[in-house]
Length: 372
Ligand SMILES: *Cc1c(COP(=O)(O)O)cnc(C)c1O
Image (cartoon, rainbow, N blue to C red; front, side):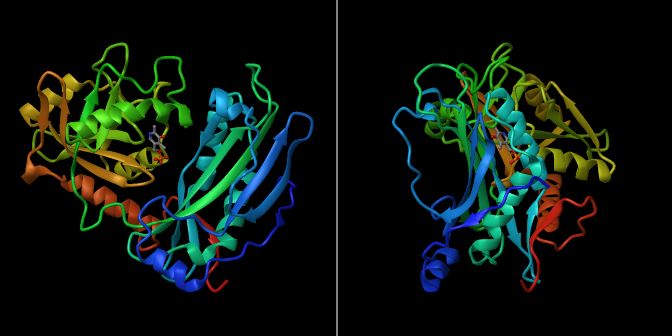
């Protein structure tokens, strides 16, 4: 264990009645808990000043490097309240490891994984009453790191800050899981070869906002990016990984197809977990290049039968249609969407997360024990 003691400054807590009103209908990303976690890094001292603080604005110099050169990375994970009152997080060490992979690419300091998990645990523990108990509700946790040196020269900052904030989240789909249409962006990319596509950084999201707006103008909920070199090989969505379901000669699902980790896409923890669950069921999983052409031809000849996107926020989002310029339209049709395998994998993964199915891979990490 990395030896860092977290000092505590108690916040004025939101009155219980107001908190309960929020928890009854939290939405996503609108409300924040009473506290936040902060750890400071400097070149000379390394990580120090670990603190649990009242949630609130952070002082920032207008010359702070993050504001000018975008040196920022983040993570997203959830805490779940189980029936016995305990609170668990899903594979938090994976988020800690991925934060460090992002840190290396963005020239930010790495944070020991145990310190990352401890920071999350500190926040979930002090704000445990903010973890909702309603169906499909969670406490969404947002760890992030910013360069925080007051200096306009262009180089990696010598001062950084790691913070964790938390926000109660309602069910992603209200009134049942609904398949979405997605828009293929060929000319606008979120990242290019050798760029920051594999890092979870704010810059990738900034470049995805315009294509997402264009997608919305075409009635699509999400954008699908393809490789900027071939404009046909699929990468991923703005914030989710993509899977196709391939059927065998008998029409039953035989394989999951998903773009390989090619240096341009995010190594999603939901993606990784679903690959494991599919393999447990005896399905083949092919991580390789997949093209829009293969998707179109596969739907036409009946070999591609389902598609879905996955990520922490929505877990699994069934895809009904892929639309794009020049009349591109690949449609599974209402009767085939959401797909059966898509929904059954969704049910299995959320079942593990909420503790109603056996956690056979040891993915859950107890943050707060029952009765604590
Ligand atoms: C966070 C993210 C994902 C999903 O990763 P999970 O670990 O499954 O939440 C996928 N793509 C991008 C670009 C992301 O930022």
